[in-house]
Length: 111
Length: 110
Image 1: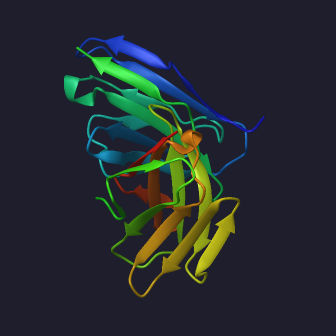
Image 2: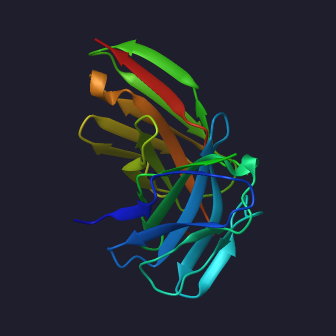
């Protein structure tokens, strides 16, 4: 089954404790991206990657890192999480210019 | 930065009625896409319309695109309670990156 998986689905952590949210797709897509969704603000892109070893900033990259060492994986790293990073996070993938497939979301709470 | 803006922000209708949502965008596009999101879940792609297309159908969905007005509309005919969700339009930036609007929340009551 074609899908994008994210882990964990729910995470509660404390300020400053490094965390990684994993994202994996099984569709051999070149393009992957991370979004955060906050009430009243819609979805905002954090980072995206056009292919292996190619990443670029989206609209709200501050406080986040990503890597793309393999085509199927695109982890999101929060080196020192802060409460303003409490949000619902989505990973997505697509072929270039095509519809995007979204993961189920990761609800992160930083206290 | 938001590229697409949906209108209305919220829409409440009865089952069987049609629902129309609009999307306006700011710059030229390659294509425009519509997505649905059930509460707190991942977005699901509904339909993609390319800049050289004016209208597209998929089941009970009809999408129009007017590039001269930089606007698109999504029509859901004969709405069902299961259509209750948020609907987003998205345009491409740099060929691939999607820019989403804030969405229209549709409530369909039986």
